[in-house]
Length: 178
Image (tube, rainbow, N blue to C red; front, side):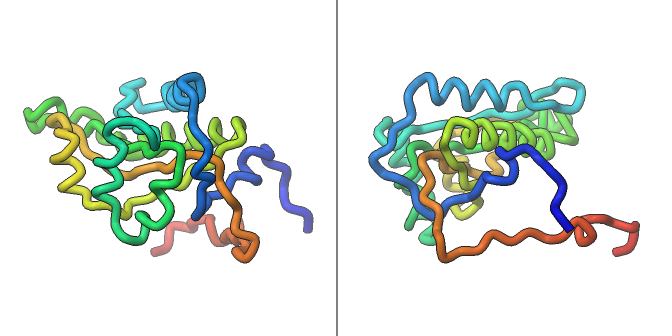
C-alpha cells in the first residue's frame, strides 16, 4: 500500500548528527527562522516561548557549548547556530501559572522553525543533552521561564548508513488503553 501524500518538507526533513562547519547563517536567515516560530499557534495566543540563539562565531556561543553533554558536544558545536528553547510557565516569580500549555506551544513554535529551516535548505536537530540547571544559571533565565531543549541549525550532513524509520500509523493511534 502506498503511503499517503504529505508535504515534501515533512517527509524529507531529517535530524542530522553532523553539520557543515563552514556554513554560516545570515541575519536574514535568523529572522526567517524566528518569524516562522512567531507564527506558530498557541493557547489563547499566549505565545509562551522565547529563543536564545547564538551563531557559531558570535559571543555567547561558547557559553552554550560549555554546557553541552559529551554526547552532543561531538556534533552540536559544528552547527551554524545553537538555539536554547524556553517556555513561559509562570507570571514572573509569583507562582501564578502563565500557560498550562507552554511546553506544547513551544513545541509547535520549534516545529515551525524546523520546517522553515528545511524549506531554506537547512536542517535542525532538537536535543536535551546539556546541563539544564547550569545553563539556566549562566543565561540568567528570568523568573517564570524554563529552558526545555536546544536546537542545532545548519547545513546537515545526512548519514547514509542510518535508515530512517517511523512507527506505523496504527501504532500512533490510541484506543484509550494504557
